[in-house]
Image 1 (spheres, rainbow over the protein chains, first blue to last red):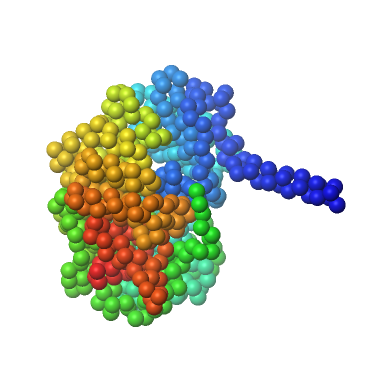
Image 2: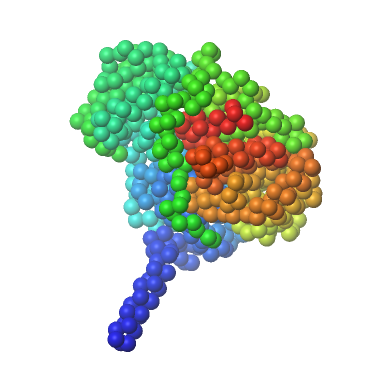
Length: 308
Length: 315
């Protein structure tokens, strides 16, 4: 009996120790460059790990949006360039899947930033360089714009990108959107509260430049026909209560209406199967209808299926 | 860090979903109160409740729209259409894109709204690096750069209230370079009021602010519980409620504006045994204290706006 208890105790302790060791899971750790890989940089602050329940301690009110995109773990550390003593903060977020990695990246970028060819896609400003690759979102931030800052950021991005084995690519679903007049780098994946409606999840949008104004194309992917139909009706009812429906007597798609959004202006909304498409801010109804028709044709046999 | 058992925690989203049947069918205060219309003949609350933010002369609605959880301009516009005039954003939200979103919505109606934004002072530890003149100069330059970026993103030439984001030490808020930055920004009319937000250590910081009386506005977590578990992140924090309220009373005497945040993160509240706990009553509890001038609530969808504006109409 004593021997059995001893064995059980040893086993229990071993399991406890394993769980303590796994408090910093291995994958993100493997992306941290070694001393040799970091040259000409050196680590000036040890890596710190954050998780959904304590990310707030690091980035305060910016944390919820990362968590809403499914952040699993992040690591942050500071490196210093030995040549000029300038420092760069490195944040690497493991977003668990590449769609969410793209999603959080898309929320934080702007068409005004310059693109960089790191990872799947990236952008930089004077003192920062962000990119997404596979399931990771990487943010490199310098404190100030010194003569060597741009080069340091580029160099460091190359080092870290090289440690991530896979690449990832822009979500396929954006190929459904029209290409003409598309504003570059305006694609967004919004995983919840699309258009401020809690029943709309899994939304994609692109901004377009048309004559003297811009308009937006939204695609919301539902789960089942029934649920998508109900959600479409909820949105229509919400607009109707607020006097924002212009015409709901349309023979277009499975359901359709023309309405007016309080920010975007005129909009055409239509549903086909599990896909809802909205053209917001386009004044010309005929063009809006053509856009939706084109998208539905490209969706083709995918109507009723889940695509990314 | 103490953690409440998860099964005691009810997220705001779950709460709204469970009670939504009653809310949507009855329409709360009647159909009129739920209309969020821009039609020109749409309804706006006749007189949304407002308070002056201490000595600043800035009048804010008692409910402010916390913009951090959304990038959707249509949602912000809906909130503003209800009569909310106070928008809280921050330079670090969505890498500055949250300010861009706010700027797009208010650019042609700027004078009607109060914008509060925040600057992060990028230090890793509590005031550790603030000791040298060189670093102080660096801080001032960083803050100036951040302010200019905020003004550009918000498409405005002034920001009503600028806060240090997440101040966590007295050394930071009492730093001469930081204070000099704010003085200069006010002289140039780039900001109207200055202050800080604090998520931890708020009693100590409020005490220091009461002593210096430099800052015009302070934003801290405050709710009936004296603690909160952030519904999205699970972050737990607690504070000495009595000590905090004692400092609030001093701040009121000093005419410092106080904004409450994390107002719903203490969970739903019931004022008596007969009432069902609600987030609305939690907000009312906060606003029943005259030293609180506004409560900012981060809102991510229309349902949350509808629930929160009730407090603005009824208080």
